[in-house]
Image (cartoon, helix red, strand yellow):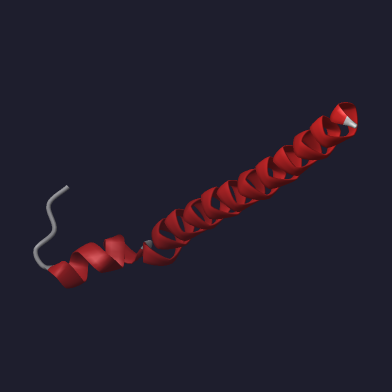
Length: 57
């Protein structure tokens, strides 16, 4: 596509709300997924450390 100016690009031919909203939602979902992955990993490492400590004693 060829936009005449930056304003036309950001407006996306009148569909800016849907286009940029979709990008925003995708970015938010990816950020939430990464945060949940970090939390799950932290819990898994804690459980492994706890199980290792129990098996040694």
